[in-house]
Image (cartoon, rainbow, N blue to C red; front, side):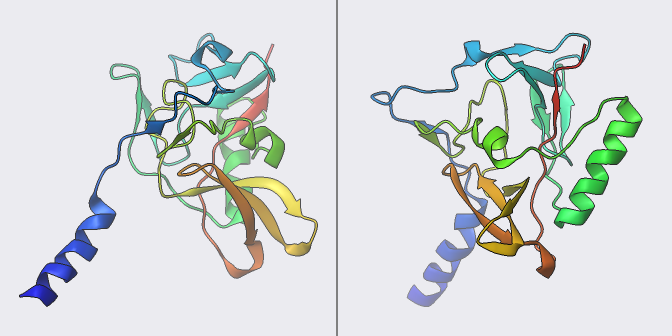
Length: 177
């Protein structure tokens, strides 16, 4: 019986939903006032008033629901080559030059005062907790790797792009005039 209970606990953990946890004694660098809805997008895109970058609020695979003001669906994951191709396809369809952000840009979304996810949930609702996100920045110490950001805890790391590793994609574009 004990063996089955342990197995049940191990299987149940991945399906448990966690609420975002924030430490109020740490000042957030990504307050909601830093972001504004980008005009004409039904709320699906926001502009970072500090960096002047426009972000898709949902990662690829999710879709924006203007009625619930939230991202719905499951994050798609891609190897880096397919991620870049998908960014180009979305850009061609929408008339913007959507791209994969560099490490500095993507890391600017991390809220180090929070985890599960470590980002502003008003600006980026339903950010997948257990999926890392590609950047376009190669790892200078390992030529076959690119940097990623894991929004579960706000960590960064390198991922070998030659081994077919699959990560999520959040698109960015410079301010569109």
